[in-house]
Length: 599
Image 1 (tube, one colour):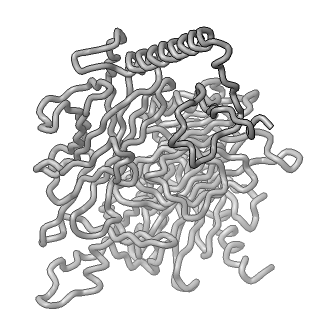
Image 2 (cartoon, rainbow, N blue to C red):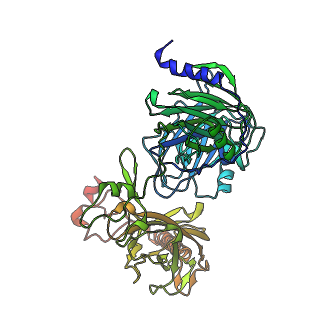
Image 3 (tube, helix red, strand yellow):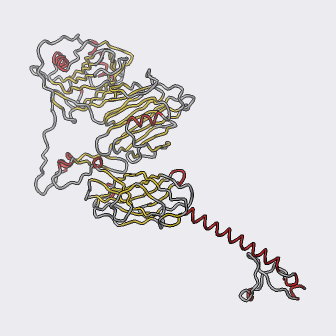
């Protein structure tokens, strides 16, 4: 037998020789308190979600999945992996993944060989490397409308809400649900379709068991029942940083009766579980466990009955597929949460330890974000809450910006102002671009591009006394019919007056406009309109042409034949143009006849 497998083999013998448990009648005195992360940490992967659904769509040509991800304020990192079972070397169906997030995310996407279409908000999601998939901009809709938007493109196979995930594994073609329509329901088990790992580790607590001598420690893991009651195997990885001779420990695993355990430990430990369990080195050897209490107090009693003097870790988790326990406690030496750190450094000094305890760092490939709680800072801090700001777009009929309107008239000067309320004195509001959408009849009229006026009919005006951007434009129509409505859209940027320009925030505001069609009778109180001018011009041209033709006809038929001159189709010399008095109609010119010209 390999030397490395010897401790686990001994653990297998210890487990098979363990005595059956007995219940304790007396109350166990053990005050569970949080354990510092340097003493113990538990992470887990689960398929349980706060809201979710799984449906079957076997005949759909597009497999649609929707993820609603909630992150705390500030940039977060997410690893998203898509797996597919290939048939004849290729995945038969295309996949649409709709990714809705509430804050900035650095995304590492893995979807090798999968024909993926990704719909997301490009202002919130940043790829750590080019995704190599087709992308679509996701509209800013509420959750119900996002589901409707996704369902218009194909039947939804799965949808889930996740709170602060660190990694997500989405398995394609694994939907086992009995539903034919996916509707979000609370506390759902996504089965093999989706597994995820929360960013925040599970709460680890510990305590001393009163009245027990010795240095034996207990690690207790309690898995809570899930939404479904199908057979489930939980892999438990235990890594204890102790020398082999310094550790006397027991691992207590309690869960629903349909849960079995696969244990992967790096130390000899006494095993005490519900259901059945096996070791990673002997996965085919299942050992029957015991009936254990399903309350924290009862499990603490089991630890005391097994002569444990200390509970090094006590963890309660949702139904998980993988649980990893890392602990460094050895020989009954328990340390709970670390003592408070001094928050006021000595005068004229800066403690690196204090600084790192106050600042949370988040790193990406090309950027590092430092997060500092504002209540810890004494000097003034400017915080901008975008949810409390409102952007308005106003149209006015005069440069005094007094009378607001939603109606424009061709040939009339219009004045526009963008406002933000409440006013933010530390930030500068600027116009990035504006355009007027007149629909299929009129197309799109660009007014401002790159913070510059587009064309000579648009003028950038001085800001208002409060700093609100202003501009004016004059609208002309050269085609009929004239559109009756339009949409004025402007993209604005809120930039700090001092500091980094990377903090700027962009928003798009718009308003619907009514367009007054001019009186087509030909004139209004303001003069002639375009159709009337075109009609008059064409009529004058036609009358002139007819009159000229009539005069030429009369002239050519009233002269005597002896006085008629032949028309020569050769232009006169340039020197005689100014002195020539006889010209033909149009571009043809005529000159008097001569002998030389007749030869």
